[in-house]
Length: 328
Ligand SMILES: Nc1nc2c(c(=O)[nH]1)N[C@H]1C(S)=C(S)[C@@H](COP(=O)(O)O)O[C@H]1N2
Ligand SMILES: [Mo]
Image 1 (cartoon, protein in one colour):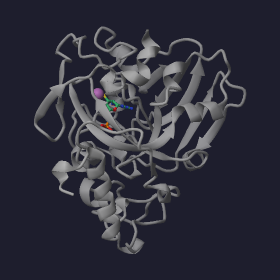
Image 2 (tube, rainbow, N blue to C red):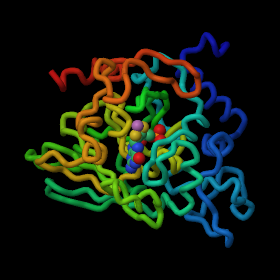
Image 3 (spheres, helix red, strand yellow):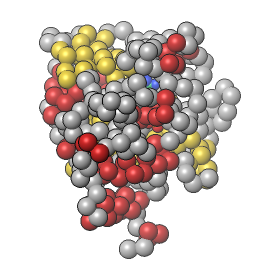
Image 4 (cartoon, rainbow, N blue to C red):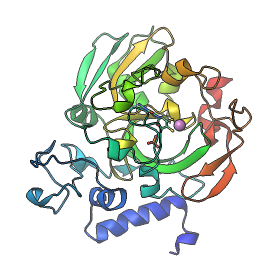
């Protein structure tokens, strides 16, 4: 099938099939397409023992050390074809080299290159607040508690750019159900790691570190909300918020907090990072809305990454059918 007649998801799935045919895993393709992820110290020590398929660990050089983790074999996960796109999937390299991650830089390019000291393992997620059994979950145990699935979503940053990518993860509603919060919980608060030796941006005292985001319980348990551990059929590379981040596709990108270490159920609305910085510009709800301009720019259209084109922004980023009822 010519690419021009294929639907966006078919183009992406075709690439995956092609890679399988070539005997390349998508992890290897990530390495080829997105550049290296993990860094290897001069002594050659790595954070995990395994290597990309087919590569002798001893021969993995600093230029190609995309290290697998104990749950890397779960990717690619089952594609949930309920979630389809109205536009082409963003090229992987494009998405992986244009990121917002203020812990590392206020710039969008070259984030990965600033993440040499960041490690995806060991990683724990503390779950607490209003619940009977608070716990600390090792990331690989957390992942194994659920069935990972892959979904294609549009993603709209408040800065008026957008992309469309396949995320892999766990529906947040399933996670919350298993954690069994008290009925008194009204919000879910999520917190990013804090370590200024690893993340130089956290030395900038004018930001309210650590990065915090929150959703109402109804938003967090909406079918669209995901705890994401993978992208493009493999584990999240560092710059996308490894090893676990949130994705809320009907809200501006800043709600989709990266590299989460704590999830808490609260009764009061938590203070969040960008809302604390500038409440006038970044409201707590942050639903994508072409009719409400940012004080400094319009939100009517968006630049589609990798295409040079602008398209009209959709109310709720096109997900109104699933979420509009939450705001009636
Ligand atoms: N911890 C943390 N999470 C974050 C951010 C950040 O700076 N720090 N940036 C947010 C913003 S503004 C966007 S647009 C998305 C970008 O995600 P991506 O780099 O995977 O495209 O991450 C969001 N999550
Ligand atoms: Mo953003």
